Amino acid sequence: MASKITMDMIKPFTGEGDVVSWLKKVTLVAKLQKIVDLASFIPLYLEGDALALYLEMGDEDQECAAKSQEKLKVAVSDDPFSAFGKLVQLKWTGEPVDVYTNEIRRLAGLAKFDKVGLENVVKLTFVNGFPDNLSVALQRLPNVMTMAMSELISHARILSSKQQGGVGAVTVRKGGEGGGAKHENRARPFQFRGQCFRCGGPLMIKDCKETQGLVDTGCSTSVLHSKFVPRCKGEVYTSAFDGSHIKCKVADCVELGVNGKCVTVRTVVSNQLVNGVDVVLGVDVIDQLGGVTVTQGKVDVGIIPLMAVEQPTKNKVRPVLDFWELNVNVKCHTGDDVTDVCSETLRKWRQTGENVSVVDLKSAYLQLSVDEKLWPYQLVNYKGQTFCLTRLGFGLNSPQIMSRILKTVLSKDEKIERATSSYIDDILVNESIASADEVIRHLNTFGLITKSPESLNGGAALGLQLQRVGGELMFERGNTVPEVADMLTRRELFSVCGTLVGHYPIAGWLRIACSYIKRRASGARWEDPVGEQSMMMVKEVIERVKLDDPVRGNWCVPSVKHGVVWCDASKIAMGVVLEINGKIAEDAAWLRKKDDFNHINVAELEAALKGVNLAIR
Image (cartoon, rainbow, N blue to C red; front, top):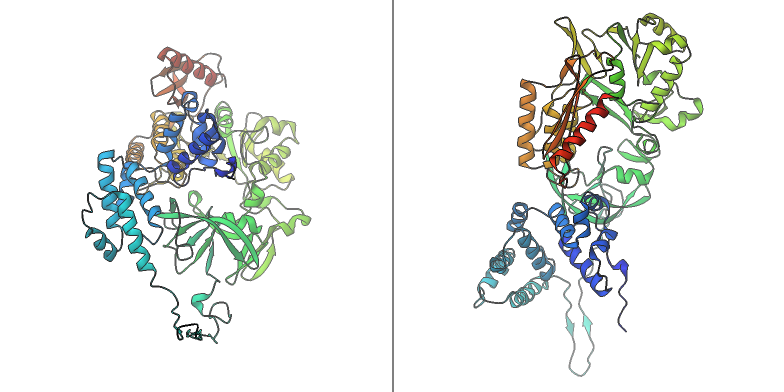
């Protein structure tokens, strides 16, 4: 009886691997199951990045199976240039000949070779990809260029099996005809009587399964040396310690053992690990182990790792604890009633006037004592000894904790509460209501120590640098314009754009430029390179910002009932500018969606509504 076709024959597609083969299999299963609505069937087996890509499609693309499949192929598959580059370098590595041929056809198809030239390209790549002796033997076959590909594969299969068949044990049998005695003359196996230099076991070091590992909490996926996983599928780019990008492969699930604990993970495979390291233990392994620490070269489970992290903006090195397991349960975003959104707080501060000063807590997080019963949860290992921290360690997503404590302390005095507005550990004091010295004394009463108060002129507030120019208090960028490498990943590009625009109330053309660069970035995963075109654009933008930074404007924004909203729209973007008393107070811009085909009048109306919404905040 024929086996029944079941739905679990299809593995979910996450964006990694051969999307073309996967789509063919899905189509075949749908045909066998007599499923007509393929457009609704395919999304059921999409996960991760692939599902996110599908959800970003327009309704028209989602309802059409052909369009949604084409979108997946374009986004996940290699572009023609990358595919051709891989095709040129493709070599036979001992896998079944049919598998090797299928990979050639896949890459040639992605490289956009037509039906006429496809067979010749496949045949030439197929023959030249074999070792020299097999390649020459195939080239000498009669009429090889007119031979059918199926026949050429058969010849290659025979030749490759002969080459591989020479490896193995030799057995000599002796005896007369008619069933004489048979004698097997096998070589006696070698018995090693020494000791492994690495693990101390009774084996040679080449047979030792204990490896040298590097614990890296900045690595999301563990990396394994290619000698342990000779055959992999799929490719991915990953960032090295020095910022360079390395092409790696993706392995199936691998079992790793650490101090008697075994975990199963899907690793990245590379042959370029540093200083003889065999495996880099990333967050995926540390997560399953429940946290690790390294003591005298050995990995121990349970103690929080202590790391030294450089903070370039303050020219300091912070001792940071890896609280990643706890952080997943701590709400760290600033969009609730406890920790105000930075841009909203900035609007409030700009309307306070100029008779204000800024008070900042001194070593804010180190002033937060931890209850003694919680000390065991802050254990660290330093120079061979175990310590428990009695103050809140760096590394916890604690803006919410800091904000709640500070707001509670300020609310203890009605006058102080009316005179102050806080954001994390920064406090703006309206000296028309209470002086900065009064606020400092109030904070000292509750054990909070502050720095000396600063005036706005020549100081900083919420990441903005302030300076009086021509009698008016002006703001400008508080951070330095970042430098970029020759190639960035999507993660790095988005970080650069965030640094350029940030929460600044006025950024002009820079907003839409950064949004457009992010949209045009190549790749689907965070670690994928963004491509030459995006790199050219981001470098041009950075050079322009260095010459004429649009992040600048008046600090003080009076609270008025009337203002002017300027708005406009094009087929690419919408932008609004809020003008108060003849001066720009704030601007904003948004890219239009790719599938936004509304009339320009509708887009202009939407821009006007966004401008009004900006004005009434």
